[in-house]
Length: 98
Image (cartoon, rainbow, N blue to C red; front, side, top):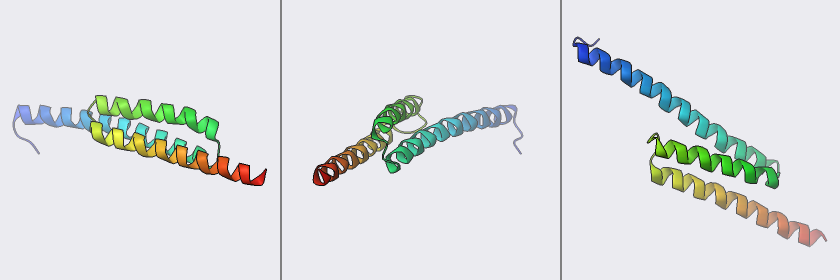
């Protein structure tokens, strides 16, 4: 346990910040999971909306320095690549069936 007053205050602020960061990280994870779930169910129109939401959440997390900007950018890029790849595969398979 901390002895100095400033150390005690610092512990309080670090706990508060950790809770805040945890909340934002959970929000990003939920947004990404929601998007991937829609992709898995092949709901591409809804997945587009979920991708926008994931972008928004990732950008806010980067803006508040919970995650680094490059990490947010990398995750956004990978999510967009997944959507484009599955959408293209879906178009190709529907053309083959026609």
